[in-house]
Each structure stands twice: as structure tokens, then as C-alpha cells.
Length: 251
Image (cartoon, rainbow, N blue to C red; front, top):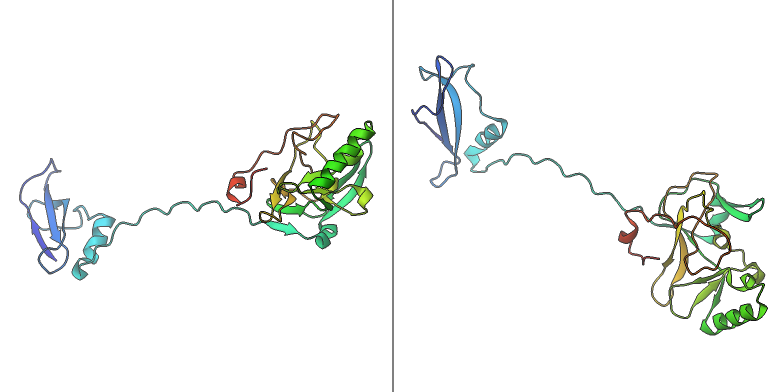
């Protein structure tokens, strides 16, 4: 490393001191990179402990100057990106370990968490698979019955594939826990959202936890705007930041 000092006074300095420009070149070969720094030195030209020391960044460059490599000043670390919660789909055989069906006076059955459920935990909406013809027949029965229309359509859920639906009505003798999740009353807040899982051609409805659910809390989901109801409900769950990044279609 070659070093030279200019004799020009750069700015006002304390008594007995003067500003000088210190210049050095990295590497011993011609063409090395040149650096400069203003330092305070005594008037007699001998640097002592009172002189201003090179900055940390400059010292780092000096230390590696002999190798021809320049140490760049360390950049501050970028904040870690928030990670999308890993999806965890509960199998039907696991549900009785995780949730509990209880009777709610004046409301019917409801589904409650036995253990804490984290965001992006999923419950598949199971029931009897219906094709387009069967769905049409079900709507015709509902219209013919009139007053008891809810007996046919309340548990019907779209799979996400054209012409396919799932019917979780108890008359099929299929215990669908997800089919018994209630809607939130106006004073409550939904903690799940209805969406679809699987690939095109074999999609299925699924309930996804959108905010952490504590043990003992009731699972609540908004059935959607197209659902016919004669009672007041709260708004759908606010979709979390990771919802559109989870590689699933928006409900």
C-alpha cells in the first residue's frame, strides 16, 4: 500500500493541529483503487494519539489493501419476510381429537375447539358428492316443499368444480363436523373462511382458520352472500395478509 500526504490546509483546525488529506492505493500493482480521507495531524507532521483516527469503514479497507481486495462496509440486515403459515389439513379421523360438537341453547349444535388451532389449519367439508343432475333435483324438491326448503339446501356447498357439490345434511347419515360450524351472530366475529382445496377436477370445499382459535372457542364461518337466511349475522372474517399468497383460490 502506497501512502502520500498533501500539505494543503483543508479547513480550520484547533491550535497545534492541521487538516491533511491522506491518500492510499489498494494493492501493490499499478491500477489499484485509490482512497482518501481527511485527518487531523499535529503541525510538526507526526501523528499522535490526539489525531483523528480513520473511520471503521476506512480501517476495514486498509486491512485488506495488501491483498488487492476491498472490504465493503457491512450493510444492515434486511428484516426477515413474514412467513406464510404452513397449511395443516385435519383428516376426518383427527377431528374428534381437535374439536367437539356441543349443543347451544336456542341455537342448536356448534363446533368448539378442544385445543388451540393456528392460522391456516383446514377442515374439509365432507358429505355426499352430488353431480349437476342431482343438485337440480334437490332444488326442485326444495321448491315443491316450499316451507321446508332449508331441509334440502342448507348443507349444500359448492366444490369449486363446475357441476359438482357436497351435501352434508344429516339425512345422509354422514357425520360432517365442518357442516355443523355455525355462522357468527352480529356480536361475534368469524374466525374461519370458506374456500376450496385440491386440483381442478377434484376440488373440494374446505374451512380455513383465518385467526388463531383458543381452546374452548367456537368455530365460526360466514356461509356466503348467496346463502338464504332469515337471521342476522356478522360480516365475513377479515382475510389475513397471507391469504392471497397461499396458492389457493380466493373464496
